[in-house]
Amino acid sequence: MKNRLFTVLIFALVASIALASVASATEWTLENATDAFEKSVILPENAAQYKRELSIQLTDQQAAAFEKGSVFIYVPNVSSAGETAIQPICHLPVELTDDHKLKAEFSGLYAAVDEDLGKTLNAQLVTVRPILTSRQDSLENDKASLSMLGVFYGELDAMYENFVISIDYPNNTAQIESISLSEERKDPLNGYYSAYRYTYVMDEGSELPHLLDMPTTAWTLWYEKPITEPRTIVMHPVTGTGCKILFCITNTDGTRYSLAPVDYD
Image (cartoon, rainbow, N blue to C red; front, side, top):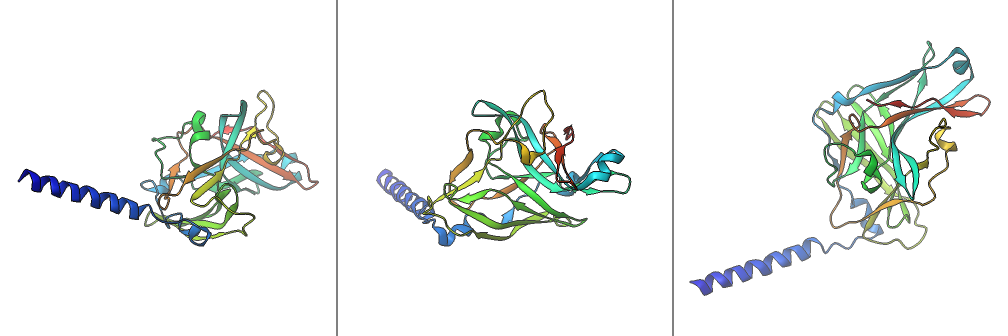
């Protein structure tokens, strides 16, 4: 009886090893790189509750010179190669209202991959977290659309384009609507995805310039993770994470600047 039980256990162990080998035997190449992310995206419960309006008042003079603007939600006090930096995690365009307010409707969510982030984003550890910077393309009562920025296949070799996620608020579901790769520039490091980290040097004690005029950190940083199975994107609430809001303005004469940042919460 003991011998039979031992034999059964050996067969079970061999079978489990064989299954594990098959499960991890996917050869990730450029041909199947668009399958490296699950089409279904995970949302927090009742994602619509996190939608909010971002707004700030301009002076009459600022409004008269205004041409276009953007708002960036960023993590402050990020340590990057010994420099104090900020890391934008999402951004969206703003509109100027008749009463001289800059305004944007924001989903209130940021994107990450399916690794354990804990319940909230830790501002000091963001550079070791797999955050994917996003751009909100549209937001309506029942749906939203956003794009992932700086996501690559391999070691910054081939970039994902048309990486678009749609959110269905009534059903509280989200999915990748489209994903494709840009033209290959060199042989990629197959079996990895990378995500560029947009980190900018923060000169403490001085006003922040327009984000596009801020110097990037001295050390190029990115996340590089092996694709052992298709990755799942998870949307997390920005609230409670210590993030800040930066309104950036471009004037009709081409000059550009940022308003003083404000706390998200």
